[in-house]
Structures are given as C-alpha cells and as structure tokens.
Image 1 (cartoon, helix red, strand yellow):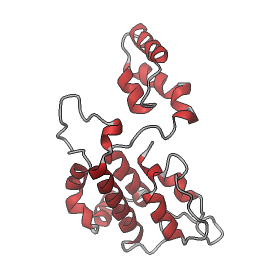
Image 2 (cartoon, one colour):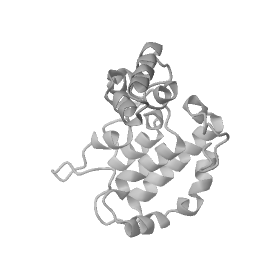
Image 3 (cartoon, one colour):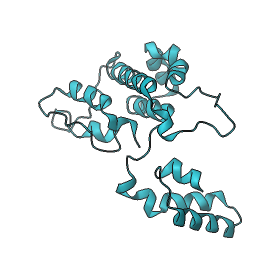
Image 4 (cartoon, helix red, strand yellow):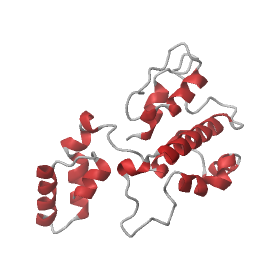
Length: 197
C-alpha cells in the first residue's frame, strides 16, 4: 500500500490511511480493482496539497510532453512526425541518460523513483531533452497552429493554456506576460514545475 501512496499521492505516506487501504484490500478478497478505486477516489489523491509533490519519471515527462502535439493523429502520422525529430533514433538513449533504461530496471523492484530521478546529471538531460522534444514537435513541418499554444478562438493563443497542458502546478519562476508565445512555451519547459506531477 505504501508503494501505491508513493507512486500516486506524495513522498510522505499517512500511515493511518495506508493501513485503512490495506484493511479494505484484505476485506475485498484482494481485489485490485477495488483497491485502485479506493486510491483514486481518496481525498488524499485529489488534494491540492499533494499536487506537484512527486517527480515524473523520464517516461512520464517525455511522453507527457509529446502527447499534446500528437493527440488525434493516426499511428502512421505519429510515426512520420516523430521520425522527423533528431531524438527519434536516440529516444531509448535519452531515457537512459535521464536514469530510466527502458525494459532494464536496476532490480526486480523496478526503478527507485521519487527524488532518485533528479541529480545534477539527469536534471540537465531532462531539461535539454524536454526542450528539444517540445520545440521540435511544435515546429516540425506543421502548417496548422502550434499544438502547445491553443487558439483562444479570437485569433490569439491563450496565455494560460500552455501551463494547463504542461504543468501540474503553476510555474516556479514568474513568466512575463510580454514574452512571445513561443518564448513563454520555452520558459514553461525550462521551469522546474514541468518535472513534477
């Protein structure tokens, strides 16, 4: 139960709640469905106090950043679009540089996660790769609007929407309103808030 808390809620489990989950799990014949419903419907899961308290794994970070630009495309369109990125042939290596060698965890328990995702080497790798992915996907041959800068319906891109797409919490650094939309996007990706969930 503690692992579920550490994966979905925060880095500091409330032992009382974890014990309640364990008891309910036992009382429901070890039903994983029931357990997950309990976790995801809990006040702790939905609490704004726990928002932004977990570090995204490289997979969560990179796939999450790619999703808005690829949403609604067919498999062939996604493959074509991503293949134009320099990162396409290097993506497994980029995960490895960030500390998550896909399909090769360090032990049977998987990756340690949490604060272990961030150190001086992996933080630079994460920032650099995130920026390259988003900037590449937002400009690589698309003739329609930038997917990270949704149109507000008045011919201008909404200033708030990119934050909702990319960050679980408000940016740590204030991003000036006077920036161009592309520059604001770049600053959002560089902000530490993009690394938390």
